[in-house]
Length: 358
Image 1 (cartoon, rainbow, N blue to C red):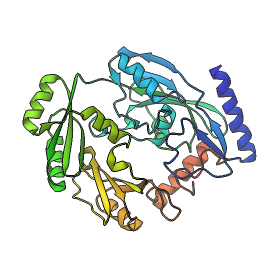
Image 2 (cartoon, rainbow, N blue to C red; image 1 turned 30 degrees about the vertical axis):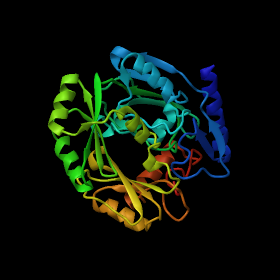
Image 3 (cartoon, rainbow, N blue to C red; image 1 turned 90 degrees about the vertical axis):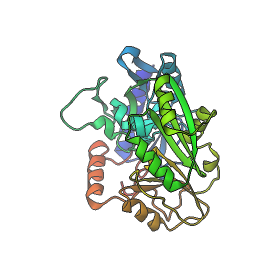
Image 4 (cartoon, rainbow, N blue to C red; image 1 turned 60 degrees about the horizontal axis):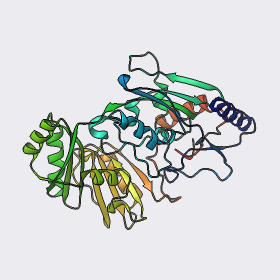
């Protein structure tokens, strides 16, 4: 049954390539707001029915699942064995799939301590733009020669291939988690987060918003208790709800339907402010969310991000006058075009979803 689906997907891609018919790859459709909208001429290639965990051995800390498998189903299975997807992927809808998770390349609050999505990808199975069924990587962590194509698919927004299966490293759930809250100003919070991030403390998430710094501690009960004594602050009892709401953007800061910028900068970057904007900080200061009542000049936001060694993404609130992702340098644009040509020579897979010209 599932192989029949792969054959159907492959035939659809081959047929589309012959006539250069653009394809819009879709799974749970939970992140359709992210990136550039698909071309109106695109034909939908729905892979949501290609579901199921194909291999999972808890003692090996590896799980392999088909791209249409819902993240909620994967995490439910992992939790039965006291394990987790350590990069804490955002869903944004119950329909979110593991394929969309990898394609979007988004990580949640635990990213600063545990690592990003691509750090946990061991292998992938894809259909390229000619319909070929290709496998890259494997199911173990090891040194390999050559280019790591598996991780190249992370954040590619489906422009390089139709994800069919993915193998991921998983980690044990922490024995105890506790959230503490400290009141301070933004500069104090940034300095505080960076000072303690360099210490051997079980800090698994940080967030600063509305004059309050929240820190999640994860690990053995004794380690969490000792860390709390060092850091100070009050225990925040609704910690699980808080971190889930930040991950899923249901926290009050994210609720207004106004433009939302995502700035990835050095963690030590001082406060960045623009008129009529609110801000939420994560990842020890390395991730700055800007919610804008009035859209600031796009160039000023991007220049601020570049000044502090990072980049800016218009995460929500697409408009035709503002590029969503940081424009590429000529050298990087050339690499992107070459990769697109190699994996999708007819240019039919999610073309323009990541960059309009690629």
